[in-house]
Length: 454
Image (cartoon, rainbow, N blue to C red):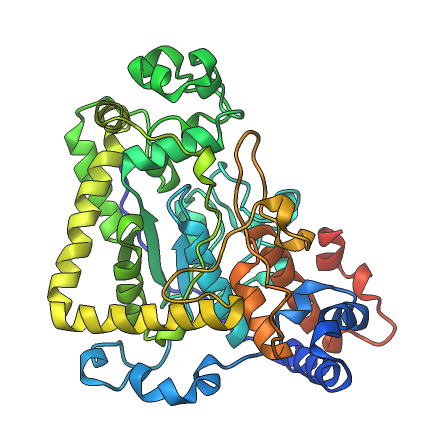
């Protein structure tokens, strides 16, 4: 029987700003003593952490674009529906696979990075994974690095463990997740995990068309990566992906449980509209939800499904299809409540802010996004996204022909830092905060929490 999620109060978090202040001083000193072209190499030498501490040079987009301040103020009548009490920092984002979750995660990481919010990061028995909480094992607090407990924010892959998440989540946390149209998601999963999942490898010539013609013949529910081969979204959200097709009672109960937890379920196909709702839910500024699309595949790595194949994928992952129908309708119900005039205004503010980021950081002209690069074209290894076998995942690098102020360059780098590198940066930052607190004569490396990181 499906259990509804319930979250009791949990200890609140207070974050020190020592590391941010220290890094700001380092960055400011570097900026005074170096030309723009040499600032990155110089900072790497000063800090010994290369790109990671550079990211912490704080940059205030609203001050930089002061002439746009009146246009993006949250005090305009359309934006008056934001929640009271200031920006919300306690956010639990349940990151699902191949749903634009990496882009949402980057938005949350950047907010946490700039505002000194503690983010839960993998540690302990999950240290080898360094960017996810021992997925697909059910989540436990033992998976969270002690330097990042208790957290205000969670944004890395995990599979919900009910009782443990109850204890970890702050009492006032806002829960958010994201879904994607199941046929498009299945095509992406097949490409991304095609060489890992035995179910996918069983298909003749590893063909998605062949798999979808007879999925039950190739699917192996007991294999290690079976969760990607059927109802992946259901699995990620804590459900049973192998329920008997047509068990509508289970699906309805599962949806009720999710609705009791999540204040917002975003939809990948309506990403900007989802960000409008997220921004208002958290009472953030439009700049806080600007983004650069991350972890996207090259066109050569994509397969265009026929209408018949897309329908076969939906029938095969029937639970995911039911979740998508429900939460897509739920999203548009919220947007109708917001009203078309307000929605247009909010979308305009977000897209204007995105264009400004693309122009200032990458020199992008017009309304287009910054140009994505093949991993082999990216010089900085820390900016190269992970490459699964047989698939090209695109990334970004700051153009060398742009001379950016150091703080702007640092802020721009935050937009394009992949998940693994950003997670490592946040953990280093958490460790840095401990340094002023260690006892005289005590080696930081000998502290138990640091030995765990080695």
